[in-house]
Amino acid sequence: MNLPLKLAATTALLALLGAAPAPTPAEDAWRQVGTDSRTGVSGLAAEPAGTALVAHDNKRPGQPRLARLGYADGAAALSPVAWDGAYAEDVEAVEAVPGAPGEYLALASRGIVYRLRVEGATATVVDYAPLPMINEGADFESFALVARGGKLAALWADRGEGPGRPATLYAAPLSFAAWGQPLFGAVTRRPYVSAYPPGAGTRHISDITVTASGRILVSSASDAGDDGPFDSAVSEAGRVTVSAAGSVRVTLAARPTVLGTFPGYKIEAVECLPGTSDALLGTDDEHRGGFVRTAPYCGA
Image (cartoon, rainbow, N blue to C red; front, side):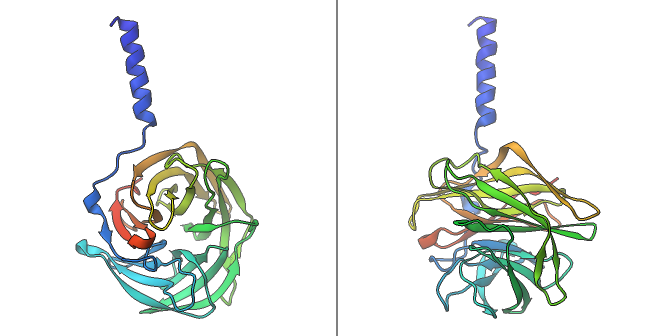
């Protein structure tokens, strides 16, 4: 092969490798935490000492909404956390409130945000409010909080579906009324299309987390039914900043950077673990239950 042809072939190969999704981490890193459709992991909020609060997306009265996950030292076990207060259906995300130990926000798929106070094995509803700018047919699976310089911001997304319906990523300043109700400021929104997985059933954003430096990481997932097959990925979507005045700016990448792909699993929860470079990932694999693992995605 002459030199021009060799250079062209090398360039094409490098382009192909650059466009390929990141490799799947080792399968044996997953740990099962649930065994049926009621115990999948739809949301995660880190707690101290190797535990996390888990959201279950159950819809019927009497079914669990929350649990506590112990994941330190190779363990992976759920213990129930009772929901006390206003009824919630299909809780898809949960997030710790920065600077307020024991306080959390949980998001239901129709766009209701619940402020919770968690003590031991009970989560008490303090108050609740709808998200701003809820469009007809929206389905919310993701929620994240960012604290910078004493200011607080929230990110959430309508998950989207397939090539014809991108996700919509929203961001707004967040504060609380004296009685605890969440209050949202001016909202910005951006369309988002995942790079992986492909196909008509792709949910472009199934969860969101933000690193200490402001990188926005999202999970994306495809779901062909309660028995799968499932597929998912974690990608870097862009960056978020919060100004000294509290205004929020989101910049999305022209094309997301795929950090890892996970065929066979439906990731619905991704949470950067404070003080580490690890993300805790959780799946809701319907009849197969839920699985968790860590991956080194949250470094600077």
